[in-house]
Length: 351
Image (cartoon, rainbow, N blue to C red):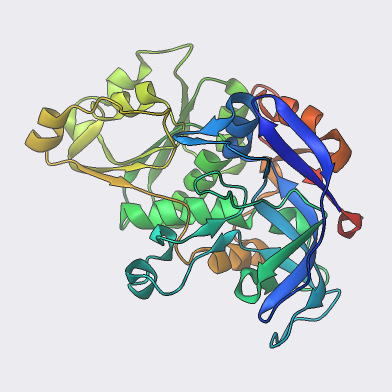
């Protein structure tokens, strides 16, 4: 089988890899589509994501859909040819966090396409993939597998919104209008947010935010770096802020526009090391500063929302490239003035 393998900074190759036999409880799938995520871009452009560096060849990709090829012993309810959403998380199900219902914090997590552990957890930009049966969620035969591949980023947005608490009637700001930021805006509006302001440094995603993703207003912070100042008054501050850009500057800007007692949810992964936080302001205004990491049970809900059409993901999809042109796709995906989400068509299942 062929796979898109990152060997280091700017070194992505289409390698031939061996399949392996299935064991009890496993399923082999043909991966149809794979979305290029910000983490894939970081691995390709920098050879690392945050503090996780590529130390051995790593198959990228975790936003995937596909069809079942075969099942191992003991697997029930999945048949060859069935279309499926593919959950990239494989928690251990045994540690204290899994038992407490916080499996995204699992101490022995295998997450597709991650250099966060050694040996690395190989990803989904591969024609075939072996998963645990609970990672394979069957969908109707008429389901659009390009849309289904968006379940993982939507699940991240849903988890971020869950971390924010009740949003009904709240004023919300989202910094960073990439796919995750846009999906957070949509999910926040679906959760009852009265106002959602999206920021970015490019106009194209901001236009999409208002046109299709539920934003009530936007701000280009590159063109108008002082634009957030009008939100600084305490009475006019935001109830909830989502930092989805991974920018230390964006994070710092949010402490000045939150109302007293507001909540800030950190979603974007910042560069390695530490980022300055105005602790005195956090303390004196009793801000709540919380993290949102991947998803915790929201994946199946995301699949349901996509299948029902409750969250339209089509506007976020910009381009599709064959696996053989993965390098070109990664280069294109980094140009946020032109694209939002680029996908790879990975196997015959994408036909």
